[in-house]
Image (cartoon, rainbow, N blue to C red; front, side):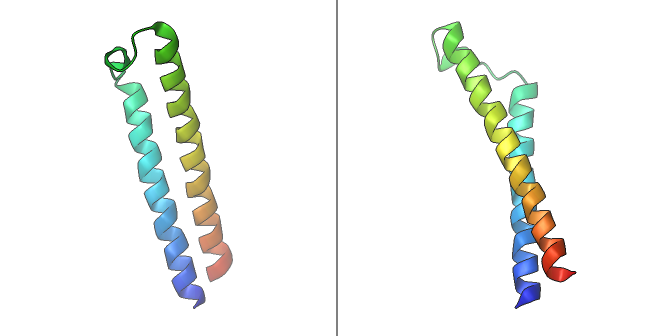
Length: 73
């Protein structure tokens, strides 16, 4: 049971890291947010939301890896 929980937490951590990398590449590539929003304020809000999601998923990936090592160890 412990190894199953550890494996699931590691898989969730890896998936969260992959999603955060996706958000990172969206921010680096400078996606044209002006197609979605007409003004500069909307573009800034969209970038802020992407930054927020990036750090949330990075935290979740760190939490998953920490849970993996606490369950296995």
